[in-house]
Image 1: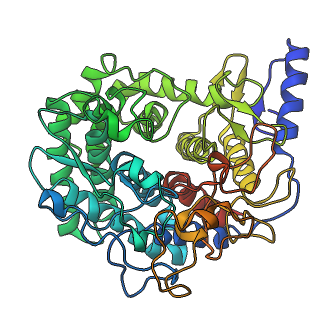
Image 2: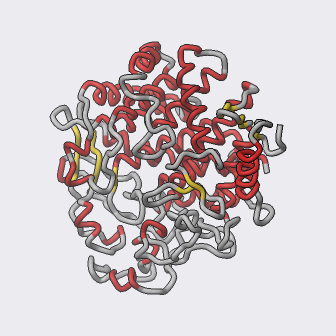
Image 3: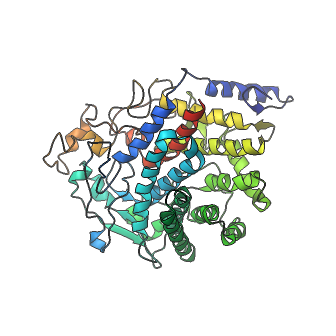
Length: 496
């Protein structure tokens, strides 16, 4: 057993030398120590900066004010609340539901070690679930978006000043959306576990709603971007298909309810819904790796041999992201950061690292390693790999800068975020119109409002980072970057 936790074959010296070198480069810390608890506190605080609706009295980011207080009125429903997904002012239901699911999973697996931040994490979760309950209050309908994205993206204005169209978009039996409905069911089911002992009545409400939403998703199958293409594409278009969200929703309902029907659904639909596809992906559009990691826990606990194929898929996912063995779709930058083609790379870094850490814990309890052809990865190695990614985010990188706003001595100053980049209502009470905000967008000055805890899209494949608002793929934060990071930071705060 190598010290880094990766077993290597003795009959492949060249392969072994290359792999060991890449591992050493990736796992070598640039500087010692991080205040993971401080980073955890800030990663949760970020969600308060993304709140839509009527803000509560205990709102801690004071530069934000109430916004979008009439959302849903054009459709005769109350859709106030929830989260803005990123630096704009649209409420996209698909990434919001995924964010909620990952916040719940973070609390389920790591809530015990969150310490004083557990309460704030649960509040962040409930802000999401309260909105999802509103969005699913009409039987057979899920409201999946509020705000016209083209109108919104044509402006640079504070959420408090919004005068763009707050168009309401929905799915129903005539216009299905099994992807967003399946993810919403997963979020509600996962959250029901978090609230089971904290608020039993609320937990039951969440689970009962999850059951109904999943039934709707499964009965009326289709991708929401087929029904709502002009509104959701290219922003949160379902490229990957809706099949994974059906399995994902069923997996969380099985975990939350322990009902036999969901176990049978998973086994019956494993092949049909392509559980083993695109295994090295996990994010708002693709749940395949997450499905297999989540279900594998039961196999590793010795309770569910009928799910053994999901564990094999999970092992395959782990092997696909190991440095030196990684699939061509998962690369590493020279500084050691996981890099996948496309925008907002940090979403891949935090989501994949969350799965590495989560699976390592499941493996540890079962005293198992992951076989990867001629090699074998230990739980300790997977933890170290996940930690290396988190440390990179916090400042152990070639630029020696943190990619979390407000953490460390050097961090992004010009993030692509309307509320952060425009003067606050307190500093500038007069309304700033749609186009009047443009000169703030183009200004070289730092953002006046610090969106503490926001993790931006991050550097490119060469570890270079333009701290500039127009470079939105690198400089824009998102809720689904931070949600899995909450779990990661909780673990490392408790153990390092």
